[in-house]
Image 1 (tube, rainbow, N blue to C red):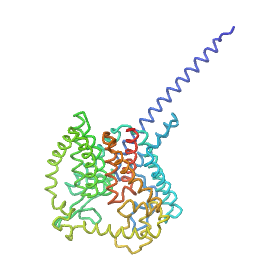
Image 2: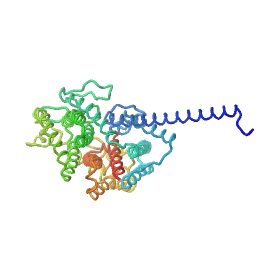
Image 3: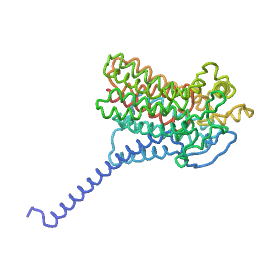
Image 4: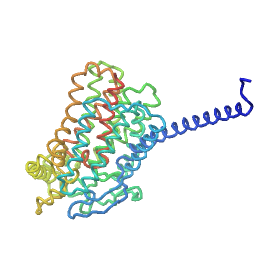
Length: 470
């Protein structure tokens, strides 16, 4: 009398089967979305330098370069949006605690993001500032993804290696042929060293094409290759499996050659700074095995690139003003340095007049055009990211950006006795230092998509490495 009827038992069984099936479907979807987010993250890193884009809205303000004013959607933007969308779906299926990382990174980074939004109130071009404020907000979410989900160096090293390999092959090919490779479908520029506006170095009476790869400029490519090579160098020193070391070597050598033919001095300096940190850490630890690997890699790379340097030696001289080669009429190096100094002075004067509120996030080229209608050089942000950030977001945004640059350095040196034992922390700091070095000489880590993605990724990797260290 007190038992279940046949119909009641049937209903219980069906309900249990339905619940089990729903749970299985949810677990499967969660796994699918998680794998998809990882895939799109890797794709973001691989595509990071690629200049292929969709023009969402053309907003010409000549003579300002149109990429500064148009609303664009780049290939890595699409991959980043895929990453964030799928990651967000995993939270809907499995709510969990969100880690913010270390306070010395996320607090000023959030402050910088908010300063970008506040700058809309005084922006000289509010729609453009809104466009960039949305971008900074998405980058903050991307930073959180790195902090929460990138729990293995392989997540970054493998796609960074693919980025370095593909871009260096294109760069070496352009340098050897002294023209483009016909890859316009992938975003490559049509290149000819005789054309006005194409980036070249001079040696005697020869105009020598600097390698662009699939990027927007040789300096951008140089920075991207330098950052990827720093990570590969750290992986090479600490990789235990010989097969993986050979694989890294097969990417590292052409990557270094690609970095050289960009003739990017800031890229060279960034690579050198990152490698010095990594080697210095191993020397302090007296890690003979890692130092042996570093020496072996240096010997192999030197043997591989000496023929390249010898062939193009006059052009390398031009980048360092050896024998006063930069003073030759054909060389643009000396003129480039003078232009940067002029741009710095003009930007500094504009900042002084608008120090409190800034001219608006992403608006510095337009503001310079409005402030200086007669300008002897191209309108662009100052080639110093701290000044560019302060000029656009005001003194408060500049202060947050300064903290993002200086606090990781202080944290590292204060805790170096603990951090030196952790290769992941060393690699994260080396990458962050390399990106910071570029920011001392160029602006693309502040304004342009490839530089921003590397900068926010570096902040995320540094913060994540500290979390894992604890």
